[in-house]
Amino acid sequence: MALFTIIYGIFNTAMGCHQWIYPYELYPTHVRGTGGGFTTTISRIASAISTFFFPLLLSQLGLSITLYIAGGLLFIGFIVSYFLAPETKNMNLTEAATITKA
Image (cartoon, rainbow, N blue to C red):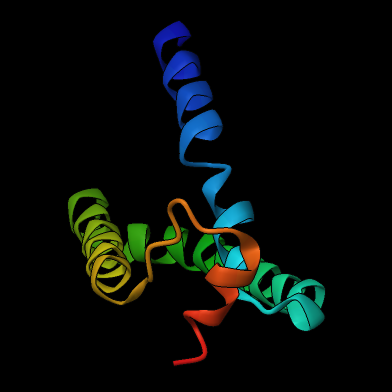
């Protein structure tokens, strides 16, 4: 349990905060608040849907198939992010917001 807590804490301080920073960098200043709120809303809706469907899949398909499906969806998300998400390293907010207009 202690190891799980340590790993969970490391994830939340490293990659967990990424979901709150990266989307806001991509929106232009005049819509940053609205766009960030929209992004957060979509994230919360997807979390609620997955929380609802996980037990259903688990009871119908079993643990291994359910986890393979979850892993496959995560892998698809990784591939989409890797190839389609623009890099914002060493950019200020104005520069980062302009790369999404192209």
